Length: 188
Image (cartoon, rainbow, N blue to C red; front, side, top):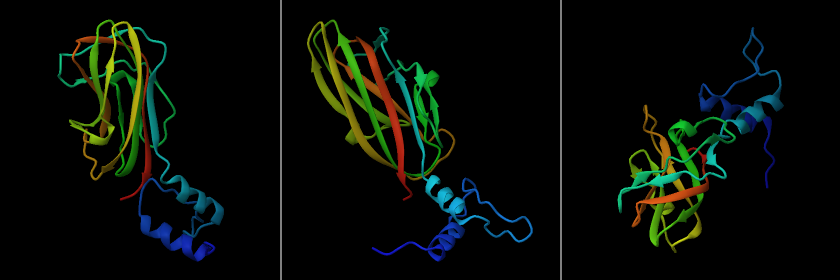
C-alpha cells in the first residue's frame, strides 16, 4: 500500500472547489499554513449524517388502508452534521449529492391483525430496497427496519428530503419507537 503524501493531498484539495471545504491559509499568499488541518478538512468534507427519532411514544399513526402515508411520529432530532434533521416535519433534508446510506427502524403495535409495509421515500418516490412488509397479530408489537443506498444526483429546493412512509391493511397502529437515519457515503 502506497503512503499518501502532501503532493497527493494538495492537488486533490484544489480540485474539490467546494464552498463547504475550508482551508487555513496565509492571508498574503493564500498558501496552506498547516498540512494536517488541510488533511482533516478533506476528511471532514464527506461527513454528513442526520437522524430523527421517537422513543417511548403511544400516539396512534393513522393510514388510509393500503395507501402510502407519511409516518408522523418523530419527536426529536438526533445527531446532525452537514444535513438538516427536521422532526417537526418528520424528514431529513440531505442537502448534498452523493451516495447516502438510509435506514429506519420501528416498533409498531396493532390492535388488529394487519399487514404493514414501511419504506423510505426520497421526495415522492420510494427507495425500493428500503421497503419491508411484515404481518402483525392482533394485540402484538412488531419490530421492523430496513436499510438502502440511494444515489442523490441533484439538489434543488425540496428535491432531497427523505421520510418514512407506511401502508397497512388496518387503518391505525401505534409507533412506540422509531428512527430515520441518513449517512453520506461518498461523492458520485
